[in-house]
Image 1 (cartoon, rainbow, N blue to C red):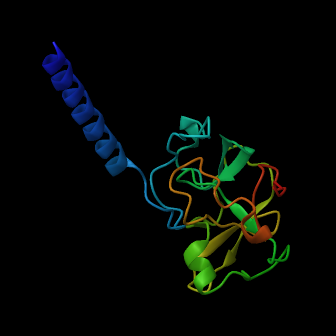
Image 2 (cartoon, rainbow, N blue to C red):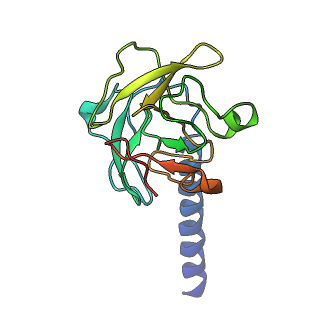
Length: 172
């Protein structure tokens, strides 16, 4: 009987390991900040909801996270403000290496599509000519270490990066 239980446990462990590898291979990578891609993903982990299906294709939407409702990009990634940016700026204070860690949120549209965002949305031109999304006059960024929709690892980083609420206020 002991040998049969050992074989059953070994098979169960093999199945669990295979499932874990499969899930790891299916997880999303870091956000590129390009604003492209296919709609919102279902948030997992600490986030309970991603934007609704009708939000697919929106440049900015809203998702429920451990921080509450936050603004997200077209891929469902949390968006952040950089407190070194000034409201109404025409250029980002985040440059060089900063942009590798904090990719800009972009759009290709002159009139960004919104889902649940009530703040005033606009754009500024990025150094490479992209349309950098702004909310209430502040540039928006993703965080490269947020691996999947609903992640909020960028919250409070360095005391200068904060997630954004749908009305454009900073979540602190």
